[in-house]
Image: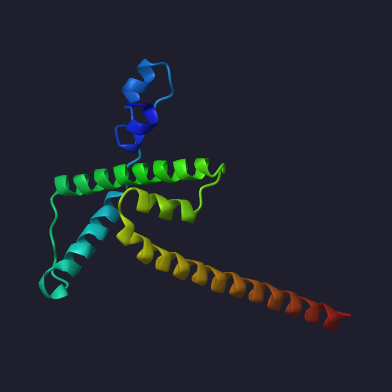
Length: 151
């Protein structure tokens, strides 16, 4: 199996294996446990009978499994999106690369909800940017008015 393929499958070399080959050690990033716990508990409580706010308990090893599987999924998705980006002869990955990668790894049902979330995110950012520019312009006008009043 090629190194790139192994990495996409989540079988990335360990730090010990990397150092034995005189290559830099691969640092394994962990997702923040508190965030993983919160996301899992929120989703499970919403799925519980009646959709109530019942407290759902999750064992540590289950949280570890969620965290590790999420990390592997992110690595696989990013490697696939990177391949799509390189096939397009670009160096910078964009949202379309990620959406195509999601389809390619057989999760097409996520594409439309993600597109909607991306549009909402972009819309909110546009509003924030226009609001920030408006405040800057107002501050400049006010400063000019004060300066004109002093003259």
